[in-house]
Image 1 (cartoon, rainbow, N blue to C red):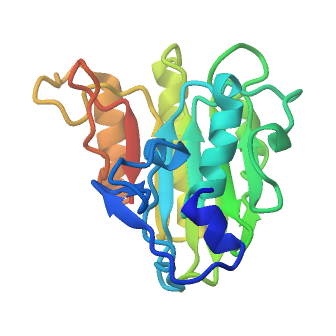
Image 2: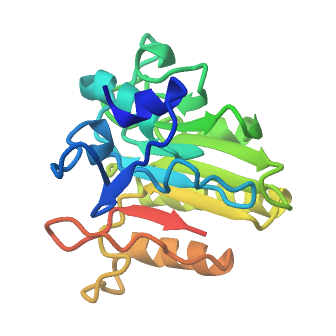
Length: 247
């Protein structure tokens, strides 16, 4: 039986050790190879703090083909918020198929008109939150996936969190209009903001950015206007960061 399950059943004097940030079974030196190995905990079991908010972001490239894996991963992780882009979910797929709704609340936006895209925010049920109503202007961007929440009572003031997926085929006009739309919302909602998602801007942090890369200039201006910093510096095999985590 896994140590986490034994702890949950009330057995005492157990300790979960970590090897390279991955839980290992104390009964052997073999690294734990279950779901936590793929989704390691952000802190030990007793590491929760009311003054901290632990977030996990991933461009998952389909929840649909890994629903069972994700369900178990979410149960075993210690994150307060799980932010996903490219969920590839459809309205016909219930959230309960891939996450325990007794543990997490779910806010999601599926890309119903075609395959791909989609975003979600899973909020641990110990947090107070409310979803963001982006207003009638949201309808001007039907192909862009957007979800947002206010998280209250963890820190003061509240934090506004959004996750975005912008398709690579989005025109420059729509791209710029959407960023202006977000700026208007942020000016109304406050400056405690975390923005994450796939903005399909491959050269934002690259040394080979060129002046004619209009999207790079737009995102750079958007970031600087809101006085945000890019927190994600993980690049793909091409050396690009398609996903942004701004705060």
